[in-house]
Amino acid sequence: MGLRAQKEHFGKGFFGILASSKDPNSAVKIEEELWRKGYHFVGGVDEAGRGALGGPLVASCVVLPPFKSFSFLKDSKVLSPQKREKLFSFICDHAISIGIGMACERLIDILGINAANLYVFREAILRVVLPRPLEFLISDWLEVKGIPVPHLALPKAEQKSQSVAAASIVAKVFRDKLMQGLYHSAFPKYRFREHKGYATRIHTQIICELGITKCHRQSFCKNHGTKSKRRLWGNNSQ
Image (cartoon, rainbow, N blue to C red; front, side, top):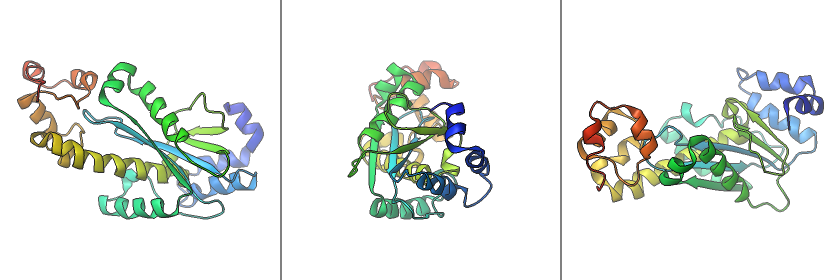
């Protein structure tokens, strides 16, 4: 749905709600407006791990119960790990459906990060199981083409939609658990439990000392610009 069509369909008042991200209840108001217009099964989709040097890109699509306010659901980036864990459990217990999509490091290198982002969004949406088809979708900034569902692509959607906020929490916690468990066990010397694949000082230092692994995104590591490129690419058999 293009911007002009969105304005014609929802009206100026709805777009005023979208702009009111400073309102602590604005994330609920978007869903309330959609419910009033007859959209009951509203999905929110967001990703985690977009900027990491290693590990997968993970997306989540969450459909929350209609006509219920969960104003305490916030963007995962502003929550402590402990709070994210608690809300993750709450969402898993109360959501109507949750879908997860993932792109491995190799696929990210082949497609590029934007195409990989679209891929995981679609995968997450297609894995949502509902008693009837998804009626509306809200995505974080990226328009998901090829999905036969009316939707809004909003910048900072996790601050404006409780469904997207829930998706951001699920994607973040799911990916963190994967990095701290499976990835750390497979490559303990890389200390994925601490940095979860992101470009921290510790992580980049370890890469310079040990080289990259099969769970690193080669395109990201090439572009990161460490001081020791020879050592960075000197050993990728770990």
